Image (tube, rainbow, N blue to C red):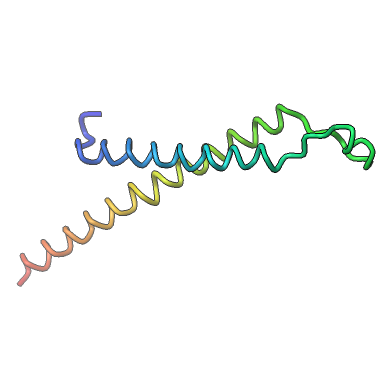
Length: 95
């Protein structure tokens, strides 16, 4: 972790926390949308849902949203800022 600067480390941690909050909302929404009445599903001729399958869906959604927010809100702006700084520095040295 020595090669990661303090500002980048704080950016990754804070965007990870924001992503975790977003994914918690998505996980709660996924639980609310999942049908809960097994008797109604059986009456319709459908398989009742499996809790391990629901848990896997929640884990995948949580992982995707958290990593996506780290990339979109943390790494991408940092990379763009570094690139712009490099380009400005390169153009000033050439001029």
